[in-house]
Length: 264
Image (cartoon, rainbow, N blue to C red; front, top):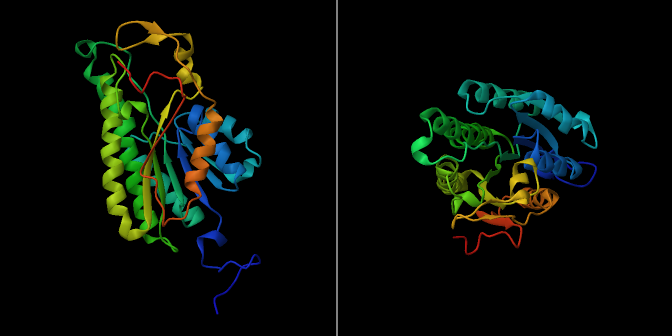
């Protein structure tokens, strides 16, 4: 007979263990909302971002701040990411969810006016940073007991169609789609479910320009509809809590009236 915990769950079942999630870009916007949603759902959180002060603000907003581990980390730094995940493994013994959310964009300039440094900074964080975190999470999820876990990449509407003058951001988000597909395939044999959520116009500081008017594909300036970022958090929690026998490879969540379907 297997050992049971007080709730009647087998002691070696993932349901009997504290669920550990790591959210990158957790200091603001979608990352903060997602982290707080997971905390309210009973998860323990590793809050990761470049600015410790912003992460502390997220921690302070948590129902129980003691359930948050705050770690400032540049996800584009391979050695820093390796050290971060080694600490997670040492402290918790496992990782059940990685939300690859950290990202940045370059100035909205014509491609011939962008510097190589501006291009590289976006590639380093959005693509290489997502790869490094997924790589480290993948290894941990393969060797932990019970094995397996879930990785959710933040793809963005830009994973499908660009905005004007957005080559670095759009290129990296298209690449995230390829990374999601490859990792989803490679994770099957190890109970690692990898999916992507493409978010359109969640009402965060990053989306403020949409509420004031942004350039459209035809050259006009238009105000765009936005949606409550809490809806993104609720959706992420729903995806995170699915059994590992189920995957949602791709989901688009967007403000209904934003000009995406039919953009251009």
